[in-house]
Amino acid sequence: MSVALDQIALLESVLNAKFQQERLSFKMSVHFVKDRMNDRRNNPAITFTELQSIFNRLTTIYISKLIRLKNNDTFNIRCNKTDINIPCGVELFIDSTGRDRRQIIAITVMRKKNFKSKDSLEFLI
Image (cartoon, rainbow, N blue to C red; front, side, top):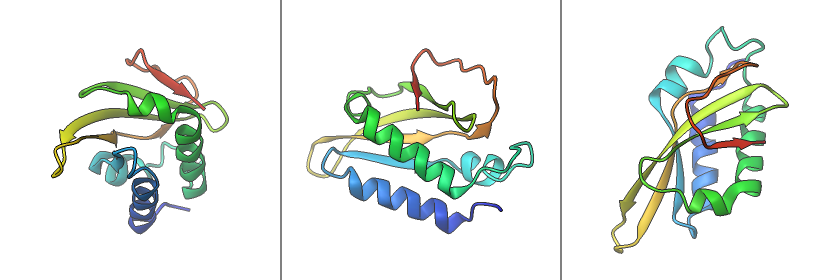
């Protein structure tokens, strides 16, 4: 079963509300949502429940490291349980109050057992 756009929007909004105090937000790129999320090469298909679980574990285990990431840092989220990989980037910007905020951008997503990441930073979940 494919993951719907409104499910991705819901996941983003739940994460963003949860980490508002830490000035951390999450965004799934257009490539993530339109090109790769429901791609037939992800076999079996990636489910919304899997994505929720991955982001919940990521933020539970690595929140302190996510908060310390710098502008243009890149990293990979690797789930050994599901073989799902999510390469991400970080954008740092100043909000309307003059405080810095980090936006984690999930660039793409794929289910691939032996995925080779170019990123030296990897969050294993």
